[in-house]
Length: 252
Ligand code: G3P
Ligand code: CA
Image 1 (cartoon, rainbow, N blue to C red):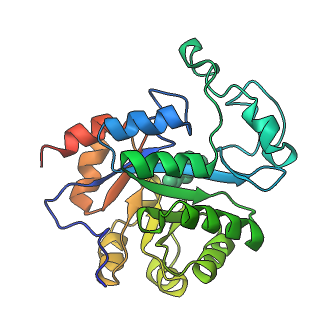
Image 2 (image 1 turned 120 degrees about the horizontal axis):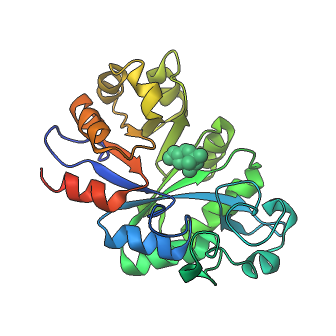
């Protein structure tokens, strides 16, 4: 089947909201996801990690310290403890009382309201923990609206085994010597380098496209860079400013 993530030149970029609309609302929360969706992002980038009792929660850091009023590693806190935390006040007083979402809640919201999830499995998940994530995606009937991505090659191998139906993306902060080789080996739908990594060797966009692999570049907030990436032929951009990128993109 053709890779529908690959963009035809001259058509709009895929807009991927980094942790939701994270410049306008507290990152990785329901409100950040909703603001991104309303602002025109078709994909919401989200980070997932397990609680102590094995529930997949949405959180970027390995601890709750920066983005909640609590402290400690997420893996040492139960879902009840995590649900008691305030995940909004750190961002602005207006958001007091915003809760850390579970993966199930975030997916249920997208299923009812519309939108797709770029789901990053943080490094260090066991196969059983990846299996939990896959179960949630299936329970929410969202397998056709989720792309699973990770820096962690093992997590991608587990996902491939457990859920061959899910599209996969590999995140990289430096380019592999042969991105097409690793993409082929892992069965990737997308190879997702940082902007800086891509600029060291922009010809990899065409190499990957010839191999049927898409490229989504992260995390890019400057309109000048959007323009440059569009001209380099990338398929999508992960940004903290999804509404601005969607507006810029609509001019196609
Ligand atoms: O989508 C890639 C990007 O989210 C990776 O960086 O640290 O924001 O998860 P980070
Ligand atoms: Ca991420």
